[in-house]
Structure formats: C-alpha cells, structure tokens
Amino acid sequence: MDHAFSLFLRSIFVDNMIFATFLGMCSYLAVSKNVKTSVGLGVAVTFVLLITVPVNYLLETKVLRAGALAWMGESFADLDLSYLSFILYIAVIAAITQLVEMVVEKFSPSLYASLGIFLPLIAVNCAIMGAALFMQQRIGLEPTDPKAVTSFVDVVLYALGSGLGWMLAIVGFAAVREKMEYSQIPAPLKGLGIAFITVGLMALAFQCFSGLKI
Image (cartoon, rainbow, N blue to C red; front, side, top):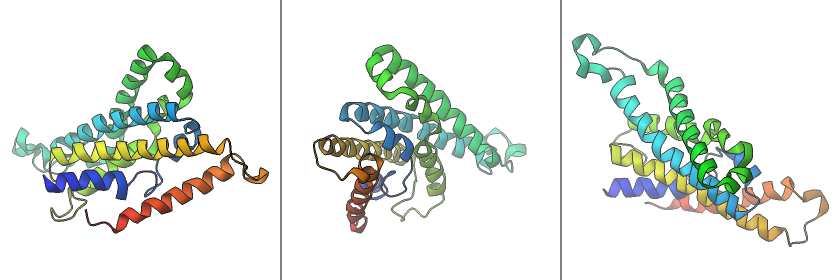
C-alpha cells in the first residue's frame, strides 16, 4: 500500500503530465483563461484517465501481452497481440471521451459551450494517450522501482494522480492568468508570450518536487 500511495503522489507532483512531460499543452494553454472552465476540463480529463488507464491495463495484461491469453488454452500461450495496443488504446479513449462529452452537454450546457472544441479533443489529448503508454512501460519495471506498476490498485491510483496533477496544473495556471489581466505587462509579451514564460516558471517550481524521496 505504501508503494501505491507513493505512486499516487509522484504522479501528481514529480511526474506531473504538464510540468514534467509537457503532454496536453494545446488544451492547457487554450482553455486556461479562467478558473471555472479549467476546473471543468480538469475534471473531465481526470475522469477519462481514471477510466481509460485501468481498462487499457486490463487489455494489456489479459489480452495483448505475449502469453496473456494462456488462460484460453495452450494454443494461445505464445500469442502476442501487443502490436494492436495503439489502436485499442485509442478506441477505448475515444469511447470514454464521447461518453464524457454527452454527459457534460446534458447536465452543464454552459460548461460545454465554454470548452468548445477542446472537449471532444480530449480523445486526441496526448496526456491521455501518454498516461496509457507510461502505464505500459511501468508494468515491466522491478517492484522496488518507485515508478513500477505492480497491481490494478497501482494503476487506478496512478491514473487518478495523473489526472489530478493535470487539473492542478491547469487550474493553478488559470488563476495566475486571471490575476495577470490586472497587471501591467509589456505589450510584446501580452497573450501567449507571458503565458509561455509563466508556464516555464511553474515548471521550474514543480521540479523542486523531483528531489523528494516519496
């Protein structure tokens, strides 16, 4: 359980999707103009990660990996379907994203209108696919490795932490951008210029967590 909790904290702070791997930057920069919209997108991304990463883990360990289908009989013991991982991961992500889009449109039309095209684009958000691929890499690590995924509980906590880390990053950035609306910013830096500088400074701040032995 200590390993799972450590993995959860690492995925939020140390291996943050935005500040450590810079995945999902397109929607991160475009939607982070106000806190309310950022919270909505952050919750949506967290929900998609929380569903898709565990489902893809089950696909990887029970279907795709070499020998994963041994439970079906000896003739399937040597079958390796890992070459299908990309297309199946994307199919799972697209299906869950479509479900999220329908739910948001039904219960929060204002949030749906605020997110615009970026809500359906969660399906191609590289942070979502990146989490699934990182999960795939972590399965084969030694159990003593702090990044290793050794059980289904580890995967769920890793997915939840990755989503919360992404939401923390976008909500924090949105709060800073709202404050900057009232600041005197040099004309050449207004807009994306000061946004990129702010993201860089926040990334440097989050690098401080990399020294922690969680």
